[in-house]
Image (cartoon, rainbow, N blue to C red; front, side):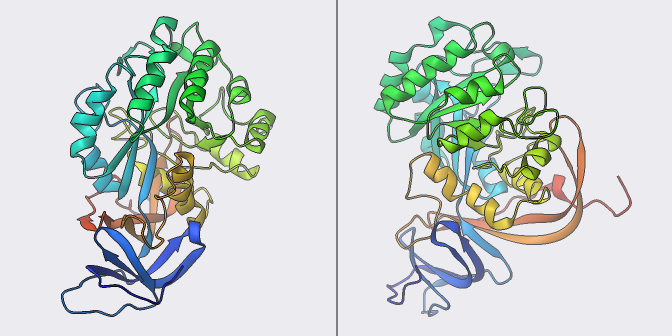
Length: 398
């Protein structure tokens, strides 16, 4: 992966610990950038006149982070958040909207939000024609609880028309979201995904349908989001063992995504599943207006929760870079190989006492924190925005 023939460069990110799981790289080296792409990697690149140098000594340098589950249909939906603000504070190069828009309003998301955003934006298209149209505090009208809204043909038509940005189909199941419809909503979403030749992302919520019923229907390459949701309808049984249906699904190629959100991540579920050897394939935030100020905050905060739950740094980098790129079938993303987009994040590993809160209000005290320093997006530098909720608490104080 490290090349010796170095072309002219625009800039260098110098001296950081570069972790790139796709290429098996974990070493201190320089990254050369030209025309918004990675042009060279070497132990040390020549500092030529006119080449900018960003000193990354002591920092961890990773491929541009990918948040596979967000809601960023900003100002057009009640729960959409500002993609630029979220990207810059959590060093995310690629934001993926997970079903905010359906066939009836996807063009607005693409033309009015994606077109002007700093991060790259992609999307899962909701099987429901209007997308998620009534999601707010004290208000929930499920978009998947009427079959006449789940128009397979219209969904496929729009997905194919916008193949440059649509990376999959989305359906939400459980409680008021799918109401009495339940699994037939999943069947329609699967039919759309099959016809469009795309993966399906499925939200698991309150039963019915059960977690096991949902994953038993998913195909290789499909994604189950909210994989560590709290009980009931969580990933583990009363003995804190991972449900057999989840292991069967993983064996046939179903992917499991964290999708923290407002109510979909529980420490007890996560700790039990991790102890039983079941890690998520991808980590995502499910950030939206109801979770952006806690408990999810953003992707980096969700990563830090798993870091303090015993997941290794290298595994977490993989879950937020190469694995979401694979899930979306976008192999050009999530790595730092020569020719890849010059998207990367600089982080510092700090040892500080910090209290984390999950979707149930349960807390855990952590001692490690990945702190954002800044990022390159297509070769342009952005400083990290302040994160006041991650200031260390005083020792001995709640």
